[in-house]
Length: 85
Image 1 (tube, rainbow, N blue to C red):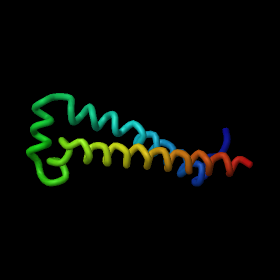
Image 2: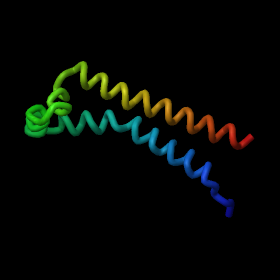
Image 3: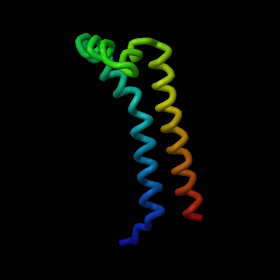
Image 4: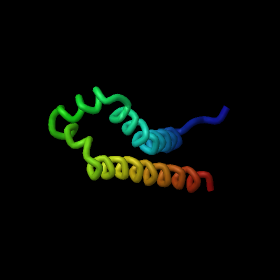
C-alpha cells in the first residue's frame, strides 16, 4: 500500500471541501423553500437570515458558494496533477 503524505491528504481535503461548496446552493435552496413554515421562520429571524427571502441576496449567496467551490476544486485538482509529474 502506498504511503499517504500530508500534502496529498490536504489536497484531497480541499477537493472534498470544494465539492461540498459546489452542492451547497442546491441544499440551501431546498432548506429555505422546502416548507412554507420554515421559509417564514427564516424571514422572521435575525439580520442575515431575514434577507434570505430576497432574490438578489440569494443569488449573491448561491453564486458566491458555487464560485468558491469551483475555484477551490480547480486549484486542488491542479495541485494534485502538478505533484504527480
